[in-house]
Amino acid sequence: MIKILLIGSGGREHAIAKAIARSPQAYQLYCFASHANPAIMALSHDYLIANLAELDAIIHYAKHQNIDFAIVGPEAPLALGIVDRLAEQDIPAIGPTQELAQIETSKGFARNLLQEYNIPGGPQYKNFKSLDGVKDMLQTLGEDYVIKADGLMGGKGVQVAGDHLHSHDEALSYCQELTAQKQRFVIEEKFYGEEFSLLSFTDGYHSMHMPTIKDHKRAFEDDQGPNTGGMGCYSCANHRLPFLTAEDIAAAAAINEACIEALKNKFSHAYKGILYGGFMKTAQGVRLIEYNARFGDPEAISLLELLETDFIAICQAIINDTLDKVDIVFSQQATVCKYIVPKGYPNNPVKQEIINISDVTNPEQLFFASVSKEQENIVLLGSRAIAVLGKGHDLATAEQQAQIQIEKISGPIFYRRDIGTSELLNKQVKQVTDTQKS
Ligand code: AMP
Ligand code: GLY
Image (cartoon, rainbow, N blue to C red; front, side, top):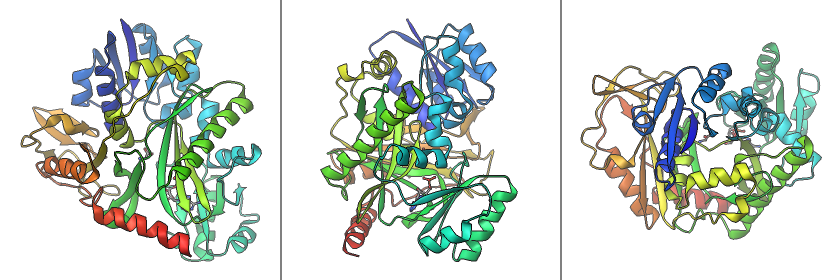
């Protein structure tokens, strides 16, 4: 009997729990959760609600339950070093050590690593801890700059010229705000093009790339409004987004592989888990926007629902450095995943309101995130609530499948109707064509 510890309790972790449940191997799932997610609870042998930042509590639980290996869902415990702490107890984990997780937790570190190891795809950039040299850097970049707070900011630390900042004065006052908070930051060149993601499983020596996927971070339709954790995503049956070529995907894969190799060389130990590359296709080629040290949410929902290979076997191969021996297969289907979020999300979400999912005819398409069950009611907790996955032989079918069920959910909620539709896709293809011309 394999005892698996799952850390986290959002939509991504529901997808992980479901992938584990499909395994032919005998297992018991233990979940260390931040809230009572009814769907993950139903799939778990044991479920503990506590603070994910309390590493001592996680270690105590893992030892007490005789855990064989852990899967770390969100970034916060990685940033705090949960993988190092588990290793001290001889418990392997799917997720990098604190040093290696810097690829996500420090934007400056990620940029420096690429530069140090001559990995292509990086922008012109500079690290700052004071206002010294900020004006010069802005002068150099003109109107094409991005300012990034150098830490885990829940997607809120990045300010893009033209989008969030409209003059060098505004840029300077954002930098002042950051220095007042003793926050380091990076100023880098702004890229133009269309973003896409390539996630790779890796044991630190071998990498297996997943289908390319498109995330939609903006809260409102047509990619407007504030950034969120992700309002939805889509992927295509041939595993290639419509605006990408096979060469683009190969370029992104090569950057992920070089990064994994560089991390191993720099810190003398292997990166184990999932490396999530956020890229942009520009007129000059594929560029790296950021790295995450874990599965994306909701990307994990789309990707794991396509995965045909035993997920526990993949985890075992990551731990045993034998990922090259596993034939990882994703089904040749398209996916569209849309998140239901509370009204007012992300800045002022309603909470503790009831939503009605009783009309949903295929509950298998639902992935529970920031909701709990109180007296048989599903209650909003304030963050992304329920993701709805559609799958089909093409994108239009997948989008329709998601839409059919999402329309059956009611309450003080909203979602993005446009994710996965041909209108939005055509805009993305046009955006790439236009940037290639300019
Ligand atoms: P990050 O947290 O680094 O992914 O940044 C959040 C968002 O800011 C990204 O999804 C992009 O839309 C945008 N962004 C970040 N860096 C750049 C860049 N160098 N050029 C253009 N847009 C960027
Ligand atoms: N959906 C983007 C993320 O998980 O970071």
